[in-house]
Length: 471
Image (cartoon, rainbow, N blue to C red):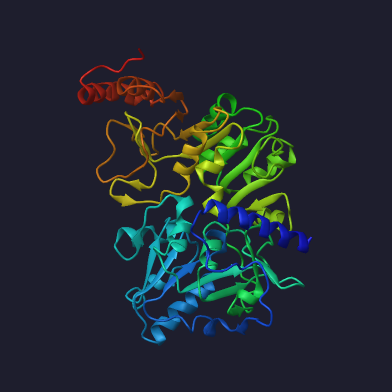
């Protein structure tokens, strides 16, 4: 099993390098360095070589190495360090570097923002960086961000000295292969996963064992409401074909769509992330990956975020292939799969089809993530059968329409009106591709909340100087 894991990882990494074009990693981490082993240190010692001005990558989502971040914060204060920059996707857990007395020494550059840094981003304590998810690894490979160190969390070394990046390969592979200093926290709870996430212990400079019992961060998945269930059912019954290759963004609506797919056949998974929703579909044999062109028979993913049940399922499971997000999310790769069906959510959409997903007005919410990567990959699918889907409730919990005449002031467009094909609410499906603005407004108003349709009709006329119509 372990030897197969290593050989498979090397093969996939080669594919990753080809996808990255001329931008090569500075080193390969999936082979042993003869005669080299890491220094086993305490948490207090782990970050001692980080200096003022360093750019530090931080492993994210479930794999966020919270104890190492605490160690770094204490190290910065004790040694009067400053201008340390953390580069990361969505982090989970405590954020000690944002506390008084530390925030002027360490600053986040958030490439995708989670709930724990949202206030800091919007209050100017942390930075926000927009980037297509599949291009984030290129920030490290091309030197736009020159890393000095990486803080990661890994599975324990096996008998041959191989560790795994576990639940989060995404941008972490590009980071560790372009960092002169690798600081790793070993955790027995980190699953050993297959694909691009293999790192030999000889490439790790400092290894921390004392945090071995640290629990991976888990996603709190709440019950779906009636709106979400209805949207999921509409998507499953009308837009997902048997044999489709699925991508799901994070959120209640994509979760609801998965829940409604148990009677489908030969579904495949090629996505930036998934959560617990795939487990039931695997058990019911709805997901077989039999029709896929890229790694047929396997679920392809870049990171996962869910429960302990999900993490346990991943451990030593060759069914799941974890890839560098630079190739997993590349539209040129995505398009090769059959019937690519991309299901993503949004904050609001205007009557011309502009999709806001990363912000609420002037307030930053999350990030670009992989939405555009997969919306575009589905749209240009080689078989012409892809379905790019934006799904959202018609109205917010506060009674505000999510289909709006114009996007809120300060809000950012993630998916442009030219990218949008299908929009789904609990009231149906609007197909916008090929439609002019008058027709788009008509389609979107049809699936808006009934209480909002009259005002949206008026707003559409005021904006377009013509009444919305289907012809």
